[in-house]
Image 1 (cartoon, rainbow, N blue to C red):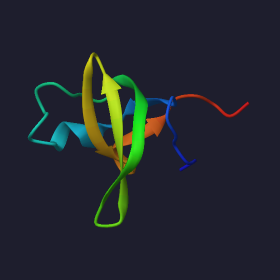
Image 2: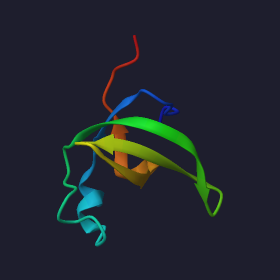
Image 3: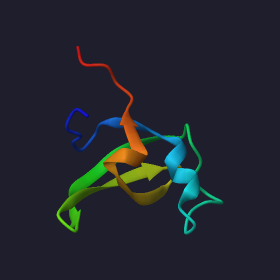
Image 4: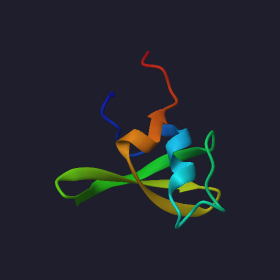
Length: 70
C-alpha cells in the first residue's frame, strides 16, 4: 500500500466489522481522514482516522487510500 499521511482520505475495509470494540459504530465503506500516523503497536504503524466526528485507531490492512495518485 502507498504510504498514508495526515490529511489523506481513506475508506474502511470489511475487516473493520470484526473489531468488537467498535463493531456497532464502524462499518466497511466509511470515509475518513488520517489525522495522525505516529503511533505504533508492536512496531506496526497505527493510524488515527477521523470518521463522523470520532477518532478510530486502525491498522493499514483495515483501511485503503481513497484518492488516486495524480
